[in-house]
Length: 350
Image (cartoon, rainbow, N blue to C red; front, side, top):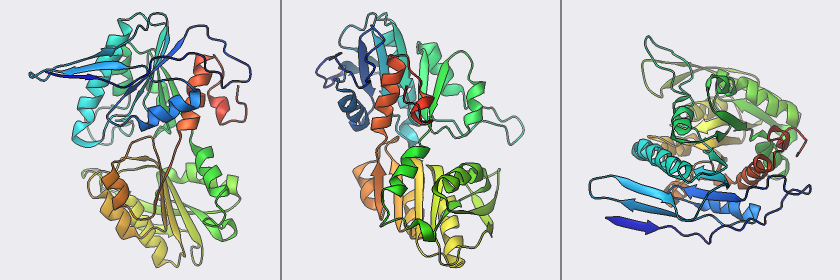
């Protein structure tokens, strides 16, 4: 039987990052549930609190026993969970649910799960006969386990949040982080010679918002997708004049990166100068790393919503990780103190 007592210094509830002070009188407790806790530790540092320790045991039969190592009675609990992609995804999701249930049995005031990337979020509609809609599967399972609310970042289809019954969902917008990074790096992004690139028609609306905010043009890659195949797309056409421009492609996620590669090749064939690629969620399935490198991007920018291994980081040319941990800390603080969450990216912090 494997037993792990995870690192944690215990709670320090004296945090105050709000100038208006704390409204919620229930003490805060934050857990990190995942193999890589760097993201959660960065959040805790911003909040000026310690990650609450938990206990984890794995039995020879395959069962696990995971629970809080300190009392959570009447506390406002936040669980930061980053499930690993690939074959370990389902195991991590189930294990997270078990931990949520264990915490619920400790009689907390509230449980909020922060899962920056929501698995199954792309399965929000049926494209073939008898296909299920599974976008709400994970929130429903977390609710059943005992969670009161779920926080996600950059949901694939924000409209699908209305289909999640019985549990409160917050969808954190990361647009400002991308915009601020572009604006504060003028040597890399010369806006007067740049355009935003939508790598497919589905991202056009979102990319137009970026272009309007930056005051630059928009080009669109039109593609077809074979819905009988998995993660396969074919580039068809490009709308806009790319000759001599730097193109900044922006998408919500980087999965196999076949779309990103096709968009980059199409842009280069039409005379684009430099090509950059932003994605909030680095899923990186299959041949993703090879596709990114073959695309020849001058810069690849991911956030830390999904932790990357050192091997993945070293394998991608011109990669830069942009942390969203400060925004995550502000979200947790606002939820804890009863302030607006959407106000964090709509100009009203409180």
